[in-house]
Amino acid sequence: MKNILLRNSLGLLLVLGLIALIAPYGVSSRASTTLGNKIKAIDGWLKEQHKKGAFNGTVLIVQKGKTLLMKGYGYTNYRRNKKLTPQSSLRLASVSKQFTAAGIMRLHQKGLLKYDAPLSKYFKNFPYPKATVRQLLTHTSGIPDVYMELADKHDDLVGEVLSIQEVVKLLTAFPNKNKAYKPNERFQYCNTGYVLLAAVIEKVSGESFEAYMKKELFDPLKMKNTRVWNLFSAQKTFANKTTGFWYASGKYHLHTPSFLDGVAGDGAVFSSVEDFVIWDKFWYGNSLISPQNLKEAFKPVKLNNGKISKYGFGWQLESNTRVSHTGSWLGARTAIVRDTKAKVCLVVLDNSTNKKMYKIMNKLKDELLE
Image 1: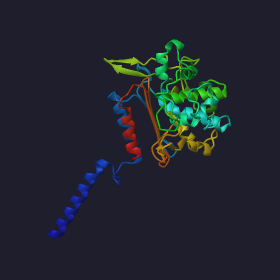
Image 2 (image 1 turned 135 degrees about the horizontal axis):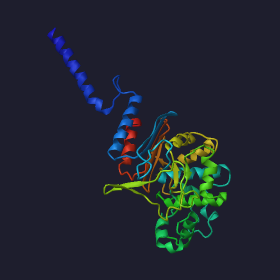
Image 3 (image 1 turned 120 degrees about the vertical axis):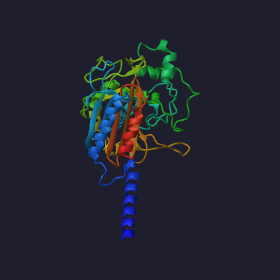
């Protein structure tokens, strides 16, 4: 009897020890938290991050078409007198690139543009004539990322605010062959290329980039808090617009746009997490771009040397089922992750120059995807 009791006691201790061992790693069991409790825990954790000064922004969690969390944590401006909401429109920075890509895809859908058309078709005397629209989209054009450098160096040739068309003129007038490389030779992230895509849209459509994106994408999709906005916009502000800020010496300070903030394509889109629910659905299928055309955005690129570059049309291709992008400009720190296998979309938008923002996205990925 003693041996039986001893064996049972040891067995119980072993089970309890295993539970104690695996519990910190979130291994599922009858005692594990439900998804609802996990979302509540995430919400509480985000509130705590905001209290610590480690987060000021909005978050979206969507799973299988259901919105699990859509909320603001903090303030819309440096004065901290207005709370963020799901409708607050934050600067997306480089997450804007997937919107620019969709604008190009819309032109292709309408038969107005071919992805493999050379840039010589759109820009006269352009010093990189063999680079194609597709290569601009995938950062494999070989065009050096120098538009900001050129604008600073030749500011006497630029108006008070740099425009999309002035970027084209600067690149044409001052080619930099030393920094350039052959088209499709390698991947090199290039903001300049996405400003050129905005210029292509203006050339083909005959409209401003801002007007085109509104008419062809944002209005049809009913994305009410999404738009292109820069220093050339007719409106000095708009409903639900937020501003970027930073904290130093015990005070919050406004991030003021510079003369560079007249360009768009590489950035300049503002959006809300509420609208990102629509944007997530867009990439599964929509009435503006055919299913076959949508697939183009998620194709890896085979380079000249046979290596594969995992960047599509405005998306970093993490795997066959997961894509993402991040952004950083004027206080904006942004990130989106979409996993088509898990049917999960995560969006984190921060407007406070937050150095820890990407750790927050990684935490959400660990909790909901890994």
